[in-house]
Image (tube, rainbow, N blue to C red; front, side):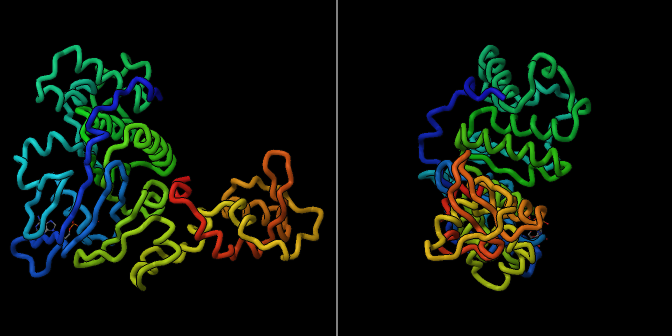
Length: 348
Ligand SMILES: Nc1ncnc2c1ncn2[C@@H]1O[C@H](COP(=O)(O)OP(=O)(O)OP(=O)(O)O)[C@@H](O)[C@H]1O
């Protein structure tokens, strides 16, 4: 993937925070709101995942931002402007929107699909061609010429979703809305596309609101996670580490599920546990302990220890021996290690 050729526009430095202020949506004919008094701020350049049970209002929240759905009350601001002060068509041109079904036009080629918004904006031909090439490289379609003339039906599901993401990025919008964009992918392709998207996100830094059913995806991708509960109320808004380690209530704890312990283990590295252990704690006795690198997650280290049938592991950084962790340390990491977790650690 070539990132260097992708221009970032002044939009990335401008304030493109999305602020929900007491946002309520009651669909006509419905007794209860789909979204109830939602207050969240997605800071400029941040990636926020919306998760929650089916019917919790995630898609509604997204579609309120680009005014596919109208607000019942409250306000949404992008930067300093209320979305109500921006004509809907103009608003949609400044927001990239990627959805599960990829939404590609079947009778347009890949190039024509990506160029949809630039063409509406009447960019000149050379500029459109340059941007299309850049974006195809960005989402991993090289050599670009092989792909430009293909139709969506000639692409795999994963490739269609990549083109959908390229199309959403085409006019360099400061804000991206993504509704289960990887939902149709098999697990292996999904992980590859997630990695690619994260790399793109880090390179171009769009303010992104991302709906997913998959809590693992949210933990991997998000700077912060908003968990909605039935009735469209916010149950918790926090970093992946916060929601996993300090669920706000029983609903969140249950929603995150029985695997919560395992997910926590995927957020902490062996090095962090070692740093949090006090010197007075007993060292490891066994000489047959496996070696684990300090940047391994606890989940990976546990696999290594259990595969070796050992009681702990020697922690290495390259070739130097930093110390030891016991099985107990790995299963019950010290609270200090969890608190010390940086937010970025959640994505790895
Ligand atoms: N156009 C509509 N008219 C009436 N009710 C609607 C409409 N769209 C959604 N709803 C209702 O609003 C609530 C929230 O729906 P929404 O699609 O936002 O939830 P969601 O969290 O995205 O669900 P899912 O995870 O199943 O996609 C649901 O009860 C749904 O039935």
